[in-house]
Amino acid sequence: MDMIIRPRRLRTDERIRSMVRETRVSADGLIYPMFIMDGENAVEEIDAMPGQNRYTVDRMDEELERLLDAGVKNVMLFGIPDEKDECGSQAYAENGIVQRGLRRAKERFPELYLITDVCMCEYTSHGHCGVLDGHYVDNDKTLDLLAKTALSHVEAGADMVAPSDMMDGRVAAIRELLDENGHVTTPIMSYAVKYASGFYGPFREAAGSAPAFGDRKSYQMDVHNRREGLKEAMLDVEEGADIIMVKPAMSFLDIVREVKDATDLPVAAYSVSGEYAMVKAAAEKGWIDEEKIMCEMAVSAFRAGVDIYLTYYAKELARCIKEGKIG
Ligand code: PBG
Image (tube, rainbow, N blue to C red; front, side, top):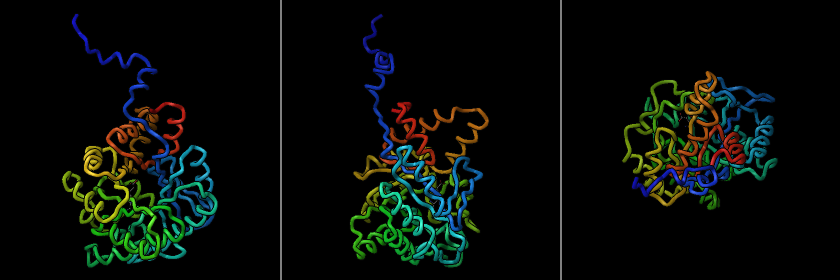
């Protein structure tokens, strides 16, 4: 037989496979999303996300310690306030939930890199990501509040802010206010390409942020659109974003690759609550191998081009990386 090219030669055993591996995953690129809530001395399990909890600020430390032990140093905070109103005023309150969490984490865990989700939906009584004009989310009025929220996070200790609202022009508005206040070195990770996805279902239960009426399709993107994703990414590059995020991850890896090719910024992808919940549910039934699936999903995102991967599995992934189960 005259067969010169035999791809299997490079798959003979783990020594050669690891030598020629094209994608290397590092815990440095993992971000763990964490929920903090008003109240005292409480940790609540999130039903639709087994293994994930909401913590009051005085109970954050236990989770932050577990993260550092696992080798994860990047955390993204989401706040769940007791009080909500029309204009989400707890989002930018000096003593809001995220602001208090930041002060505590900064003081006790200076080695952590603290990122905050900047959005209104957990703070508004109607659950939309901005202020309303009738039933329509008013873009330009919302920009001021988002910028104020981002500034208050940075002043409370955030190392980076991540707007997730999908209002037009919010990266520029946040950049301008941060710079005016001397925070020129604080990066913005923009949820630039965020689709109106069914995969956010469990998060909305976790954060109590489901919209009271309608949906988010007048600001989040139509899942059918690819070129519009590039348009959103490039607009945020022009407005001064430092990192571009695509969300969700698994069903949008084609978009990750395109954004990666089109920009020279680091690219992030967020493996969202529904992705996590699906894996957990199938694993609980014994239908899939949770660890294998979790690793494969992460590797696929890195292979598609992400530099940064946000996942509720950050601790478990970091362990798999350490143990050499993932490249
Ligand atoms: C806030 C926000 C959401 C998520 C991240 N930031 C919810 C939404 O847009 O409805 C979803 C994260 C997840 O599902 O894990 N706007």
